[in-house]
Length: 259
Image 1 (cartoon, rainbow, N blue to C red):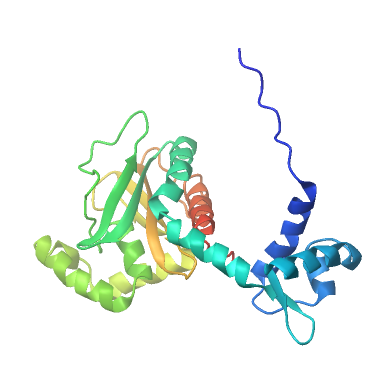
Image 2 (tube, helix red, strand yellow):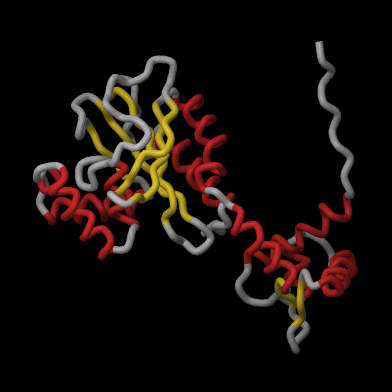
């Protein structure tokens, strides 16, 4: 039997100083020392030596009024990390945990050449008997995944894809009116989730939540789906709540700041 892993020893001053950097990251405008220290829950006397060191290495800069903001080193590190980010890779461990927590099938979708495309599928012990697999392109009008992308992608991109979608599916994408479709997109934006009930497959309900990158662009849709008999389809229920939290956590990993 292996012994429990011992806590790794760290440098406390680095952990304390990082709180100041986090406060600066959350504010667009430069901050005075007192405001910065207050945001990090420390005294100005304690915060000042950290800021002196951060100034020396370029983690922060000071303007003419003596206020602090993130400096060129912070920018270089941030850009380096962003260039290495893979949204699907960042999402995968959280999606696995989401599937286990909810007991539902979880899919990841990206915007591909033909529209929203499934790139990962995690199924519970009792999988759904539906024709869904990696590479499946989702209907824009009739699936939760498609409506999610329709709500957050640029309108011109969606409009072109809608025409292609209708042709590919023999007109199926036009089975609801334009007014009904726009109402569904407004509902999606209002809840931060899209939802379908028994559509396009009878007896299967689904939610889809958006994942945004640091610039606010939609990069992933996380879809939870399952049999209506065991799927909590309420907007704040046992599926929607964890799904939204998962999407927010993945967005944070991609540099998206909390609103």
